[in-house]
Image (cartoon, rainbow, N blue to C red):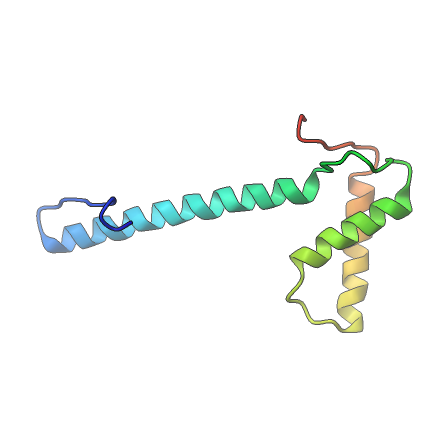
Length: 103
């Protein structure tokens, strides 16, 4: 896609700098859109099947989501304790909310 992103400058140095800036802007947009899609897919309950009063089931859902995000973390006991703490925080934070894509 280098051919589609051509910039003209007065000197070759200016053209190189313009190309670098343009590439950085495009990559930042790709990363930003990817992060938004990832955040939406992790926070929304697309099926709408979880009862907000079922805390145990919500804990399991948030634990699965957090394990996806922390898949490269070490699997020792302190990491598991931190993950459970994060899960309980996320469950209490979103308790009572039904997040669906139409929101």
